[in-house]
View (cartoon, one colour):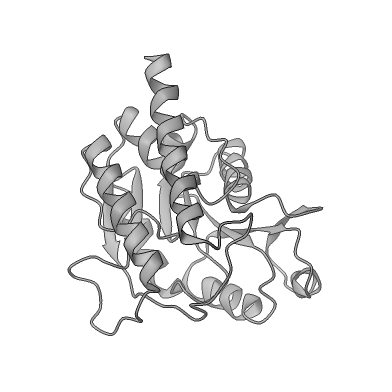
Length: 235
């Protein structure tokens, strides 16, 4: 199975080298890092790491755009599976083989930090994030018929054949909502894998004015409304 590990990156100089080394240790898949306009030392670190591909944004274009660029790379180069994993030590590269194995049977394999079988030692989630996650996950399940327990985990594996059928254009943090709604419309099969809930930096900022929980919730709901309306118009 030809696999690509897609790693969105923005200002992760403290953890970047360690995460890449762990990814290489646990898989021989190709690695693509999308440097989304980092202003710290991330670019210099990337220049010293061999055996990776890098896409560089001249300025910050958003988490969603980084993933869209990674997905396009996977589609254009005819990979079979794309695994997404963050560069901040909140995902465990040792689990990549499990995601790849499940991707042989499902179109999307999503990590879940709130799965009933998730590991017992879990970091507490910031209350506003957990509350919004639970609300949005419930809405996504109602609209799609999926039985997700975590709509937001960035640790996923995608069959590239499914990605090629999607029309993703949400450049910011709302991209996963587009993914779930389009996946359901396309009839894609999904499953979850329990993963540890790790918060190395619970005070980490959102960008684009989304630090305020109410603003973030409003933004997410607007993405859902827009996507539902969009696909109704194409039905």
